Length: 341
Ligand code: 6CS
Image (tube, rainbow, N blue to C red; front, side, top):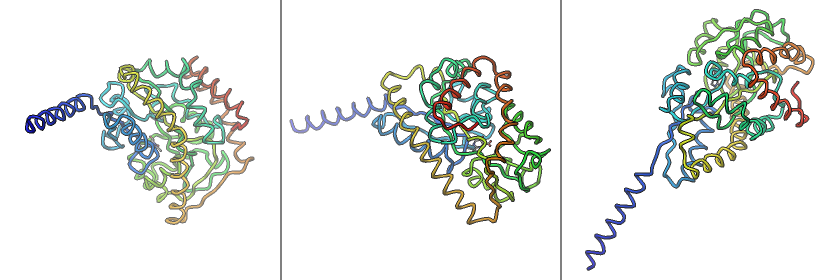
């Protein structure tokens, strides 16, 4: 009798095991950045929350830059075809979702970075038809938006005015709006892959760079540049995207869990980027004698004026949906009273 009970218990345990294996699934999450980056820090926290909330039924597999390849369009293709259902898309995503270049506009978002995160993750913006359709038309869903810190210029010379930027071969991510912006500043922007940028800067193929502080440190770019210039002209903003079919196929319970996690990640993402950027600035200061410059208001004003017409360039490039998305952002920025313009 005793033996029979033991066998029954083992069988029951076995069944439980089988049932939980059958419902277990893996969410693959492709990152544009390496370990030690803001995207990686965000993804680690996201993974922790999803795995806890799903009681281990879901495993989130992190695929940092390099593990899926190094050509961003390969990552975006994999998200579009569902091989990697989750991922980040930032500046290079402009070729796949032109409207996403909204995130590259200069002097548009509020100065307050948490406020920026809140606006770009509000239902009013993120769930708007304009933003949703822009991604869904390409088989994607915009899940969240992650500001990763201010974009900081580096060069081997001091830059305080547009004249200082004249003809500077500054490296920009592959997107027409960034090229238009830096051409408006008088520079000669060039595009180089992220993984090739260190040697391009070292060899002088690129004369300047634009990255959030953590990336200047994480990728070692600061080692081969003499000046670091804070103009607070824009923030580096990544889109957290999902495969459309994958997202629409989630159960109600899974979608609720995902949405509540994304809500929690707005503040956590902000905390991660603030901490990473301030700590890495200290590391850069300790390890180098790079010259750090902060532009004052009147110096920023000259760049702000040149950036203004690029808003219209964005609308001309991407059309009505872009105009609507931009209008939503501008309305919130206006209401926040913290205008960057
Ligand atoms: O500049 C780039 O290409 C890359 N920089 C960062 C901080 N993240 C991904 C992006 O593609």
